[in-house]
Length: 104
Image 1 (tube, rainbow, N blue to C red):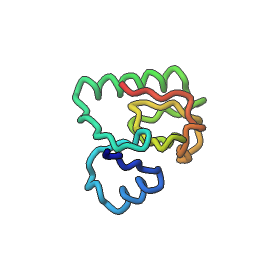
Image 2: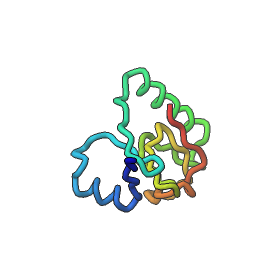
Image 3: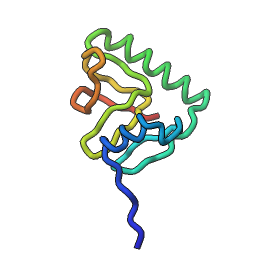
Image 4: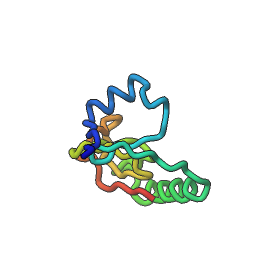
């Protein structure tokens, strides 16, 4: 019986830094590498408009990020289309900083 290799966050980061994936769009979800679909024009428009709307509605009390990775405790590092996070500068490494993650 074949068992898939489970990636840890640390090994995934090292592989990305070493250029092993050659810029291929991947997400780490529950220890598995998942190829990301290319973003089409309608999807890009909805994501951008949604993020703009949230920025306008929520103001400076939060930061609205688009397509940026966030680390989860189950060996996952998705890149949600929109994330609402605490305004902490560049310190968005874990789910603890997020209020909402949206993947459209």
